[in-house]
Amino acid sequence: MITVKIQKLKENAMIPRRMTEHAAGYDLYSANNDDIIIAAGKVALIPTGIAVALPIGFEAQIRPRSGLAFRNWIGILNSPGTIDADYRGEIKVILFNFGAESYCVKPGTRIAQMVITRYQEINFEESENLDQTARGDGGFGHTND
Image (tube, rainbow, N blue to C red; front, side, top):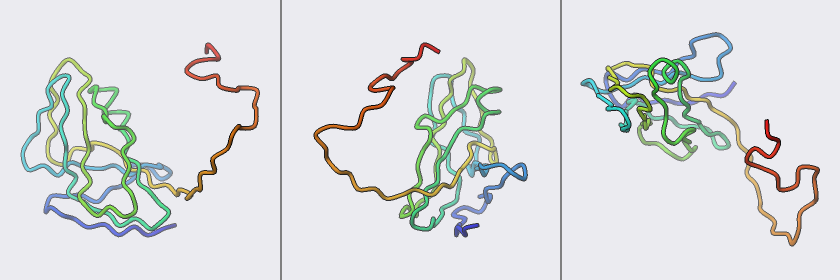
């Protein structure tokens, strides 16, 4: 288990929480003071009122909530969003309304989920050619499945 320091930047901010015992994602809550209406086909930047200090070697991925997407057609435009270990600003979520009707984000709405993962630093080594695989350069539905 790792420890992540979290700071409430707004009085109405809520600490992220898992909704089931083995959930990978921690739900993020909106920390807006007033309702935010997202018209059909539009985006809104939703504040969470929190900032985190991730340990070096970790990132936080901000992902859509499946229930919000399925029931209300609300997703995250840059999914997954990435919070780097050196970022200390407020976490905000870019919600997009894929639906045909407006959606209201009330204060305290569960708007996204945050998954914290370890990453590995890498060194790119330029090469004249790469080893061959059975797949080769096939991509973008090359298996027709």
